[in-house]
Image 1: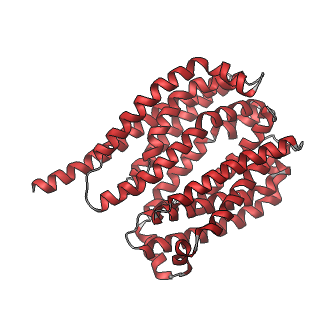
Image 2: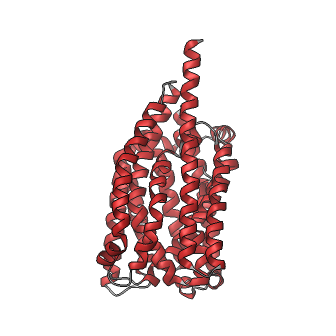
Image 3: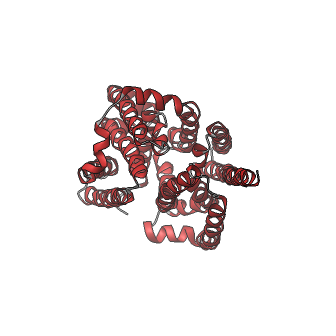
Length: 392
């Protein structure tokens, strides 16, 4: 109610650009921090991620000198006034990715929850503060940069010596060893994440120059309402299930029954709830956000199947890394990108923003559902190997 759709459109474009840059900061090596059995190898992975992050932040800082050209590329001149914040955004988000996986490895879930809670409070509070203070156009951008920086610094200060002491020792040969052992991450996981990220940001990066930030603002609000609660739930389950599954695989224990129960639980709760929301969505967005936001509710209706599939797949995406199936995972990301791109292109050719969003959402739902079926099949195959070994 404080900010206009154009303000959310600018915010979404800024976040989309930073999200693409963040992928290169660790080349997906941060996902491997959890996997080593020996702590020294996990420490080495953290050090390598920090080295890569430093290089990318410097390059992003250099790109600030070309902010006007970047803004003109997206036909959003106001972007140039806030692009100087991009290096801070990249540093804060990627820095937390690294620290987050180190916390998962150490089992410090309290620290993770503390970061998420503080960031949510800071983000909401600063958006309200800037809004009521009259800083409307850049208020959302300032908030989205400020909150992760403060939360990251706070988490580091509260981590304690026990959590961070192992990271003080840098050993070069350990880094070389883990880079070789986990080379599949930059070879397959990095292209997979890059393809997924670009495809995920496609409506913003492609449609902003064509339809303008107002339409993108409606779309970004739909994404925020649809995926903010889902991403919090999925990320929490991902972190717990990642370590749980890794421990069981390391000890050669069965995992498929656990994932089967998870699937039925999510479907039993999610389908009825989303079905009810589908009917009332446009009216709910008008009540919550005010007049002029009904279009957001229309987009959300078409996104609900994707939301449900994303909750399922987003919670167990780590299985491709645990079983070193990143190459096949890359194939699924390419499939997702192809279906998303086709949906968006159809809408662009018809000059219909809504049609682009419908095609994008339905294509994503189909691809993500197929990926979930494949991930579950990995757990069944793994359990089958345990049975075969027992019989032998």
